[in-house]
Amino acid sequence: MKTLVAGLIALGVMGCASAADDQPWYVGADAGLGGNYRQDGGNGRVYVGYQLGTAQLFGMEFVNAAEAQLYKLNFRADVGRGGYTVRREVRVDGSALAWAPTLKVSDRVAVAGRVGVAYNHANVREQGSEYASTYTKVAPLASLGASYALSDNVRLRADVGYTQVKIGSKENVDHAMLSTGVSVGF
Image 1 (tube, helix red, strand yellow):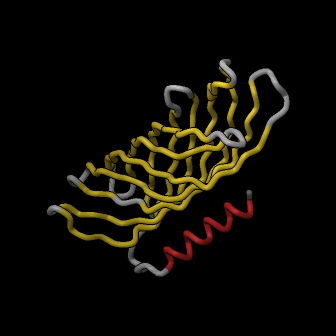
Image 2 (cartoon, helix red, strand yellow):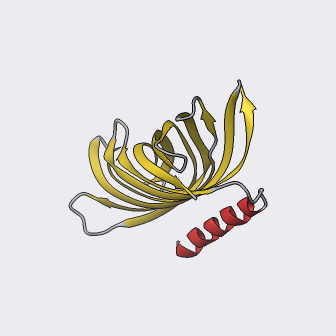
Image 3 (tube, rainbow, N blue to C red):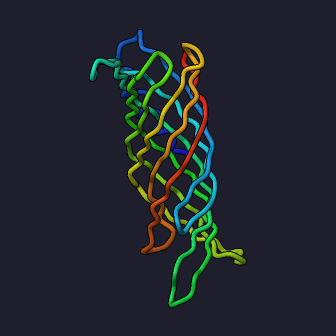
């Protein structure tokens, strides 16, 4: 897992290195809640990004960026099996590479999104059991939200995200995340 994470970050950095040198790097962190009608839990993420350039869209500044992310998801998932509901405790370590566009609505407010690919490594155990099963999955990653600039370098951010997690040999769950955090440019 560590080798894959290091490779994904290196790939993201190499892909970003070909962009213009005058575009800023940024780092960020966020935390929040995650789940859907069958899940509840929390999540946390750290990321590094590089702004690739800007364009005009509908008269507003459109900023393209590439991001490398590391995240953790912890949730309980209720799964039906043979007429019974089985509760599973799921702990996910993930990494992702994403395109992260931002549309600046004003000097301070922007609509922000992410679209990419994630690698999820889940440890899953049934409630009350000491035995855990391990599953991995390459899955889509997407989010949509907004950000507010506190200064030229600091932005508050809130978004709703999505990915898939494998929790059984034939079971995948769609996992939604609501996150808030901060990013700092340098």
